[in-house]
Amino acid sequence: SSPLENVAYAVLGLGDTNYDQFCGSAKLVDKKMSDWGAQRAVPLACADEATGLEATVEPWLDGVLEGLEKACKEGGKEEENVKLSEELDQKLNVSDDGGKAVQKTDIPLSTALV
Image (cartoon, rainbow, N blue to C red; front, side, top):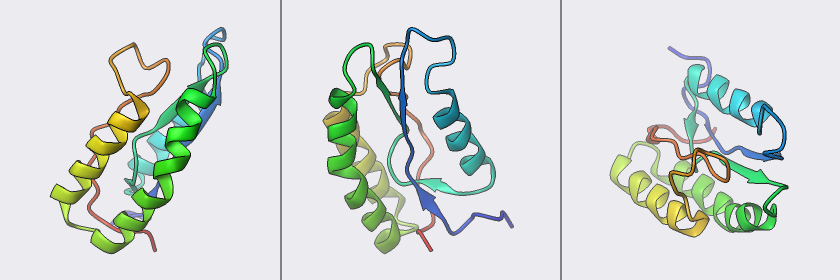
């Protein structure tokens, strides 16, 4: 069993694409949490100071508590978790822009926050 198998989490990175390792710490935390068995409640969001943090931070803040709450209530209901992820992607305007504004992840929820 994984040390964090019953944990759901959310990560918001604040960075600047003018630097080489944009949101490097947030990406590392997200990867390690996933590696240790925790499940993302909402997609990793990386806000860019160069383009305006608010465009990513505000929608993430608007959805993160709902995402964590749903993760706690629904734990293993993967269909609902996928639907929530899609809704948050729309709120965050996730696009394939190289991950500079928001990095989309594909790991479904299967456990709840303890």
